[in-house]
Amino acid sequence: MDFDAAFAAASQAAMLGWLALILLPRWRLLVGALRYGLIGALALGYAVLAFVFFFRVEGGGFDGIAEVRALFTSDPVLLAGWLHYLAFDLFVGVWIALRADALGLSRLLQAPILLATFMFGPVGLLIFYACRALPAIASIAPKGTTHVDAYA
Amino acid sequence: MSTLTLDPQRGAFDAADSARSTLLFGVAIQVALLAPSLLAYGLDERLINGVSVWSKPVKFQLSLSLLLLTVVWLLPLLPPARRASRRVRWASLAIATAATLEIAYITLQAARGRASHYNADTPIETTLYAVMGVGATTIVAGAFVVGVAIWRTAPEPGRAGLRLGAAIGLTLGAVLTLITAGILSNGGEAGHWVGASRTDAGGLPLFGWSRTVGDLRVPHFFATHIMQALPLLGLAADRIAPRRARAAVLAGAGLSVLVVAAAFAQASLGSPFLR
Image 1 (spheres, rainbow over the protein chains, first blue to last red):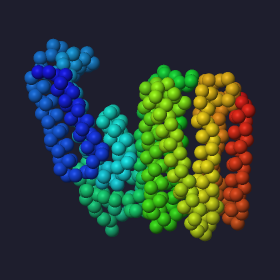
Image 2 (cartoon, rainbow over the protein chains, first blue to last red; image 1 turned 30 degrees about the vertical axis):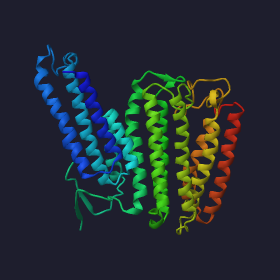
Image 3 (cartoon, one colour; image 1 turned 45 degrees about the vertical axis):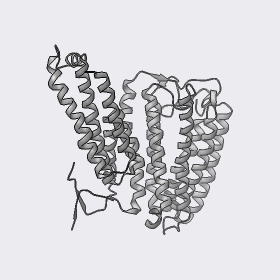
């Protein structure tokens, strides 16, 4: 199996997903395709690689940098790690996009936040956390309204 | 009696508050980047012009937050219908978006250990420096539009000074910022210094202004903070001497023009603001 080609294909697919999330309207079909189609496929790819290659790595594990580094010396496990990033980052991106729509956050401001999530995962999440917290702290939301967050 | 709403919740803010919430989202983005930038400031040993690479992001995150919060503070001077108008909502969105793109690039360049302003090292950085100028102009233009809208609003009783201070502060502050920052950014090779220095090391605490040569960032600072100074002056005058509130704000406006002009003259002559 050509892990380099799989790496490139997965990265390109994820990038297309991100572009669609940032630029296209939030069609139900698109959101479903990202959530279950693309992220599902990345998760499946990760699972297969983990099943087949993870436990073959000599000295590999999660206990300390040396063990994780050993994992990443194996190309298929490195690819699995990359798919893990792609899948989870995009999942967070879709979550941010839907929550931001609900908050009334303009698509113009969503774009750089989603871009930050695409490139630097947690940075985008941190920014979106602040976007949820600050207007609430400043209590601009109408008084007497209790908001129940059914998805969070 | 409280209302219970379930997801998906749309329009958490009513139309009149949508401009303010947009600006608050803008503040949130600045603050979210300020926290890691401050920690990086303490950890990162890389320097640009003799000061930490994180000095500029931190200063811009603070000053852009202040500018956004100023507009959030002053918007309620407009009646709800005008606050909900397309012009005011678009101006707010333009300010918030431009401020976000500015700080995104400034922060990214700091992380790369590269200058954002005055950087003509590569074609892309030269282009993005010019784009930053467009972004900064958008921010002050948005503030100007809000100032004009406040200008055209009849003052509420007891708030004449605040209204006039806000109207003049935002418009005059925008115009003088455009002028001072325009001159500042045309420094080219010389950067923001007037004189030999090419270092920010040993500058005034917090501000970083040169203590040995002229620094064109000083008039920019005074010009931009007219946006806070005049509304605050108006607010104080409304409390202390309501009958003279208008006169106080007008005098303050004249004085601020003089201060900016004096700071500009001082820097142009190559003298530091303080030694």
